Length: 190
Image (cartoon, rainbow, N blue to C red; front, side, top):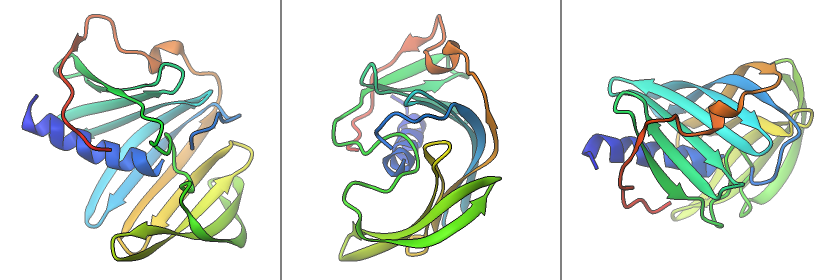
């Protein structure tokens, strides 16, 4: 497995670790912006029946991550190489979308706020972050059954969905394309 693939896989799985483990009533697509310090990674997300597809492009090409709880797998797909890696969706993985982690402490409703055209409930909570607690803020849209934004000032990290379009999504978005070669998965500890 190439060093670049492993690096991209680690970064994307780190983003996935912040992402709900239940089924959501919403079926939608959205643009997505992940900010980590000075790094900004725009992408796209597709959500359907607890399944998720994320697409990111960078100088190394496009990376597609498909999370399939029904099959208990995560596929990391590299269209440029026509390859994919299959990873087990482990039970301790918090989920697929922006979420309030199960180990959240000091959960506090800050109020309601309109975001991206949706009514949201804005919460602050803390999660263990090394030697101290890390405080995060999350905006949850009950209509979509999904959070739309998460911020962490401690790490200067955020994920936000925008341009949300509700509607039916095709099965092919949540599958490995025909003819792609399976490659060994990196040793990632997520």
